Length: 550
Image (cartoon, rainbow, N blue to C red; front, side, top):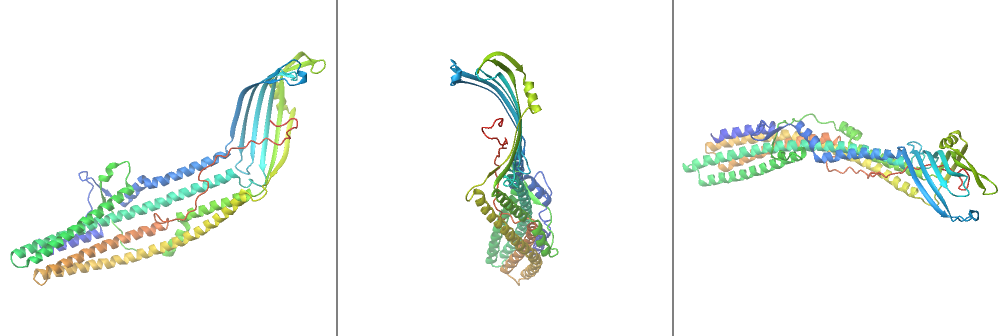
């Protein structure tokens, strides 16, 4: 095979590798362990298996769990008590006679439900209690006594906590955090897909470069063979053979570097798409089979910027952060108000048991007994025989600067910062998209220039080869023409890779910032949910008043 024919084969093979990848497209083979990988399949594998994306996906589940956690503050709470107590106390009354002690034995139980309302911040509670008390006290009219009671109470804030209390503030923040985590996942998904696409096209270009460098080495080796024949025939000086052999060594080094670069690019794709549990995937050869698209229409920059400002995920997250800051302002503004609360309650009581009937002067002599059942006591409760109710208001207000006032100042500053961050991100988004659009246009134009350069380099090598064969050129000029052709083909490869990468970035930037870019998001409040116990309203009663609380 002549050097001229070899050159034409190399040029055709390199052009095929650059334009459609056919020089290295292979069929999947179980013997070689090669995987024919389409771009769509690479993206699907990344979405399914990429561990970095899985970490962000789990954040969305944490956000949903925190919303459920914060919603627990509004769940009705059931509580019950069942116990027995016994107490023996010294008899200290002058009327106790020769008694040295008084014993009281109690069996008692209570059950109730209370709830914090998810609107208005009011709380209500309903309780039912019963007790059986046995005592040897001279002053007791019942032994044992059976008591029963029912109470309903309601507490409603009128100023502070009415618009937003701690529980609702925590719930709203948790909802906004969940929304932000979902946007973060979508943003990460876009970034991962863009990274996979860039890595895919980089691998394809790196493999095409290996083909170019291998064919370039083959041409140089063919020139060595021809020069060796000429030197042996006395038609060329030995220096020509030395020069050709030196060129072979240089191109072998270039092929080694190209293979190393292709291996790195292949591992980069593996890292993005492999299942970490599948250790054999590291040994599978990847063969990207999709073809790159050629230069197309100039992108509509204004429409792309408008679309990004409307729907980019980092901007949506920043606006969610702004809403979070506004929620803090609303909360602390409400918390500055006086704590004015409306309190009301109703209690019905009943008493039964064995009533001791006494005669004579105080304390009297037990002359008989009269028994009533617990059912009688319950009937008294339901019949309203012994009602006790209360209606009133309470008010409290700190004297001096309060925690809430300081919190309002801080939240106002955070809200202004969040607003400025939104504006800054809008400027960043517009600038980056306009730059990406220019990259698409410039790389598209570079492809045409690089393809023309490769064509001219091919023509020059062909002419130099013909001159060499008739003795009008030298080994140096031929090898220089070969180098120029290889460089022109590499330039064309790089231009096509840059074009594909710029397309990927232009599309991705309309949805999310580049991976690793700063989104300037503010720290989210309420990332940890604090347990807020539900208060039990009991109404308002003067401590020494009869018929008091439960």
